[in-house]
Amino acid sequence: MLAQSGDEDEMLKGAAADEVDPAIYTAINDPNDPYGYKYAEFRERRERDMADPDSPRPLPRYGARHQTTGTPWGDLENLFPIDWDGLRESTPKRVEQLKGAMRLRVAFDHPDLKISQLVLGPEAVLPGHADGAPGAYIVISGRGEIRVGSENARVTTGSTVKLEPYVVRSLKASAEEPLRLLWIRWAPGGDQSYVDAGYYLTGANQHIQPEQAKFEDGYLFWGGVDEAYGPVETAVNPTPSGAVPVYADAAVGLRAAKATFNANEPLYPGVSVFAHDSKISWLSAETLKKGGFFFSDDLGSLLDVAEQMIQIARHKAIFRASRPDGRWDFNFSESAWGARSTYVEHSHVIPEFYYVLSGPVIYGVDGERYESMPGDILFNNSYSPHLAQGIVEGLVFRSFSSTFAPNGDRSVFERPYFMIEPLTDQAAGSVLPDGIEFH
Image (cartoon, rainbow, N blue to C red; front, side):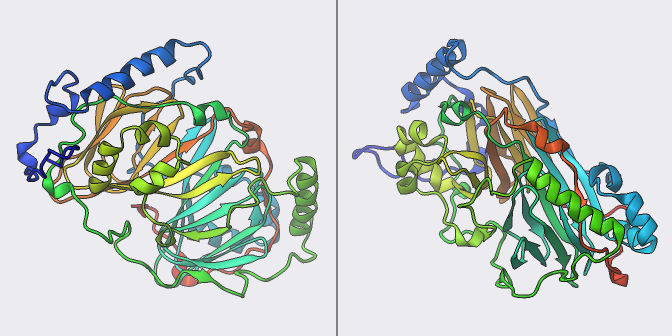
């Protein structure tokens, strides 16, 4: 197990995975747990907060487990509601080519948050288009070029891209492989009382972990850094919308929508359009002390355990939708836990999802345990007890762990979409097989 705190404690030799009984993490009355008193305080405060009418109230319950493996790809015309009839009338061949080169499905459909999986075939181009919800792309695999407004960049695995409402964006995949992205949208202006509310570490013996769970310095979430990432000068699809009525009408509609929904000013002006996870450091005990995370104050009061947790875990926020008032609507993080480690039961008021990237691993939510694989999404409602546990020797379990301020402006999901740049002839190699997998 990992070392305990105190000058008189000695560094204990790490236990082998089979020497750690998983039941120890739920032994909340274990007299040998040096931090048991603190976990008891968390449990008591959680009960008080749940009963306090002045504390944020639990949100309507939403399902805990959402699986995407084996789920059919969605109907592109329903999920991407541009003027398909007008496009078919104008360029029917290019419409069919785009449908052959693009796959889209909704992986998570919460009232405040939509997560879609998007795939473009090699060299496929999705021309300039826009919708009315704020969002982000997270590149899961592949390379490509993306243009957002007047900015262009090469993107690779680990890239993030900010999408302001009704700012035109276009995408092109590289020739080598498909480009896979998570496309996440959220309701802006959410209730900040959930962001400010507490974090409760309610398990036991978090300090006891297998030796193999410890990370070496220099751990890379994606296994390496693709140096192809960076800005480019040329646009993905520089062809402006011409006199073809369907595109001219879309351009007029976009201008009207931006005026109607006050979308001429960005919601998150201080957030970079393009970023990459390799440019962001892992959370350390020092950065934890500085605050800025929803769990900073609560976990920061338990820094002896926090410092030990950092030996077996890696965590960093790679995208945050920070508002001009200093608050934020959506936070997206990378998390990695060492092989056979356990993140003991905990909870918080702010809603959260885990997007699983390696498996099988165990995620426990509200007393149920799920053996999870890449592509699974586990949702934690307000105050939901949840935990994570590695079950495979040598397997680091990776996930995205993301929180959002709930009860925002959900009408953004009903706003119209516009395709304002002409569809192009897709490359012959861009056609995707019907059964293409996302992970």
